Length: 247
Image (cartoon, rainbow, N blue to C red; front, side):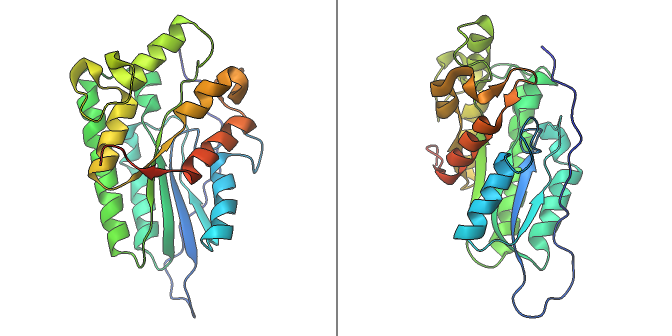
């Protein structure tokens, strides 16, 4: 299976580095892949836009910096995307919340099957590096700010196909369930995300459960990305995010 061709995405630049009169603007920063970039969602219906509206009402956020990029892997994220996000956090704006959605293209693009595949260690190192740098920057930013890591859904939920089984193995390893102590063949992508998020004090948004219950109704069949309903479900999972069970 190959990843669909990437659609162009508009990235909102991080807050400019300038002195503000009065209170600085408050900001929501999103990092991730094509899902974060809003692939297959109608304008304004992608999960980042939905969260921006939510955080505007609940946290007083008035700026959005969406650095999501189609095709991004955990390795490429450590380049310009992470640098831009850190610059935004370290800038004069007051960052209120950061979300990060990364890892699925390590499978689709880089063919990492996780578990005992040596590339699992590459993802763990990359994701640890990203979360540690983001958390350090947030610690230096005024006020409390949640860092929320998204665990992935199964693109093929409800199909009853070999693809559904294979994706569950990628997400949860041979154990086929969440595991805070899973290693080796039992370690899946979502396990690794939860374990590393727990280590760095990040919250977890569990998108898997909603997509499992909805089957294919949340998936755009032309792109295999979430449709508008799927993006709404992702946003709801982020809003309901809690401390990683692996803390």
